[in-house]
Image 1 (cartoon, helix red, strand yellow):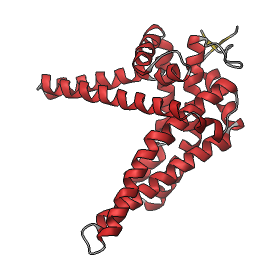
Image 2: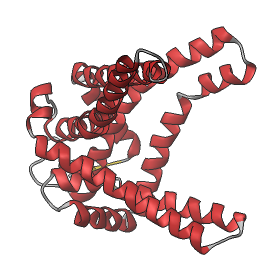
Image 3: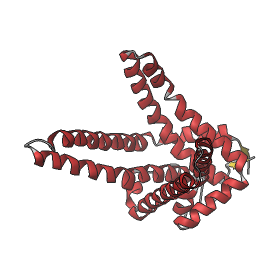
Image 4: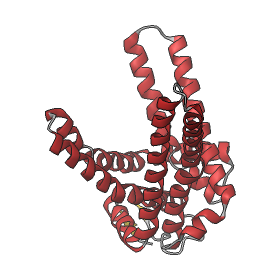
Length: 255
């Protein structure tokens, strides 16, 4: 069993993305389309709800609500599951990703549970402290702790834990491998932020052509980086846990 570093995990994620690019690009475009339709419907609803064409506005608002449910309930969990299956098996398909709806529901419930926990902690912090500088520190600490739940979806998908116990396992896994996980998550954040730099530059100088170019570059960048992240994280999970049944990932062990 050979040792690998973070760059090797990214290299493996890149190789797997190239093999499964059609699956990830299809999911990415599907998410973008649903979000675009939802926002367009919301815009129509805001215009027509206060006009004689009330029915059109109501229809637009219903479409917006449906899209608002489809993305976090089905499409985002499907993206997570696709990355997990690709990291575990080497390849996957649309049919396999959407076949197990119970897994998608579990991922959604986990994400909702984590958001609820964070919201409760943030509310408790704001109720318990009054000094603004202390609140900023408290908010930062709470948001930082949320990163400890990164492995929970993979604990659930691997069948090792239920939703709440998966969060506990993820915290434990992160705590005992903190330096490795910290560097890995920093690399994820760095890649995501680097794609936003051209957009930020365009907005800063307020040049339309630069803003348009930044938007296009950012979209294309995320088209590649987000699938790689969705594969990189389960690869990291397999490397830290040496999960059984992972044919090509059992040799990925962090030193």
